Length: 197
Figure 1 (cartoon, one colour):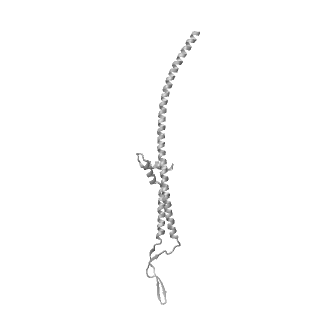
Figure 2 (cartoon, one colour):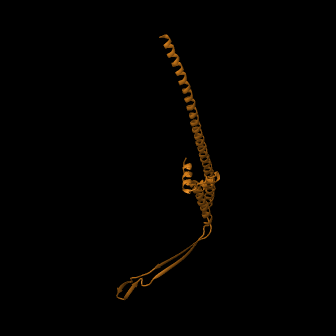
Figure 3 (cartoon, one colour):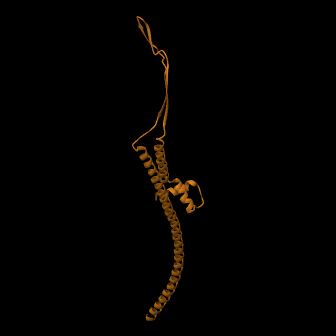
């Protein structure tokens, strides 16, 4: 039902006056399916997790920089002279390289899990696509069946109208004949009463 309403909304928004084929309907439903898109994105995420775990075996390089700027210089007056603290600016640059040598199988396990999740989510996306195809086709054929049932109902209504008109014509003719018979019987009864009197 939800899918049918979605297709109806899409049809209204499309401004298309032409009828959609089953193929067009299925293609459009798959394109706008949130379930398929979510599973595809989940599969991509899991594949990236597996790739990240694989790249953790590569050396990791980090670069850093820090600057300390002194705006006020602290001074201390001593009998031997002045002592100044922080009377210069300082800059630190760092470069660090980290290499994983042993992780107890953690990265291999993360890579395997990421790959398994990617395969599972791709399968879920395929299943979601098949579900969309099934529901779209079922809705498509329900719409066609409803249209055909509506046409049949309209034909039955028209046929019933024709039968009603024919029946009314026949009834009118029979009523006319009945009126003639009643008139004859009334005349005969009046004649019989007149003979008796």
